[in-house]
Image (cartoon, rainbow, N blue to C red; front, side, top):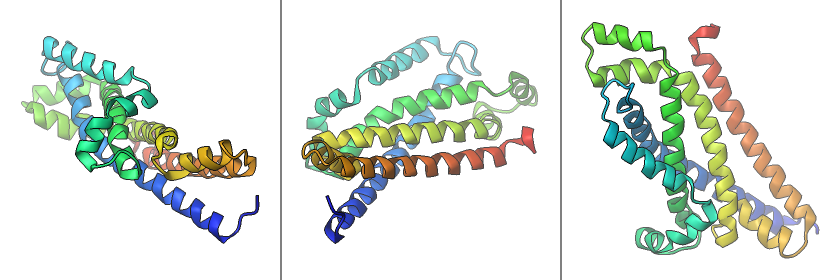
Length: 221
């Protein structure tokens, strides 16, 4: 096919829809996922405030959500999506299942990053009488910042992949274009262009977060 003005405008719109879905779902997922990760780390049996029963129940709930394939999850939450945004197609509708899928994943990524913090640093803060919240905000999160940024790069690119899959159910974006034109109409060149645009977005995300992570890592200064 020829890439005329209409096709180029469609690709531009698809790219903007993809960026919108990824940005909104990543932002809200992190607002949920960071507290989840902190709760998992703090209440662990080796955490600063162990609550084994709460930790097990929360961990089980997160694992259950993470184990559901994204396409199935989108279908399962259709009634909830309709309740929240009033419709089940389009970028806004896709954000709801993206958040539900991504928040538990981010919670585990945050937990993993916080557990990498040297236990000696936490013990030193405790010996100086720091409260739990002071340890979280002034010790754990700052010390884990490089790892958190690397985790963010991985998480956001995962969300980008989910957003492309959401195109299969009319979510819009580059995934929708790839399926409608590249797959159903056998337009291989359109498929290749959408894949190339997705790769470019992934590379930009990875580069931005990895550079920020390296700059914030005290060990390589």
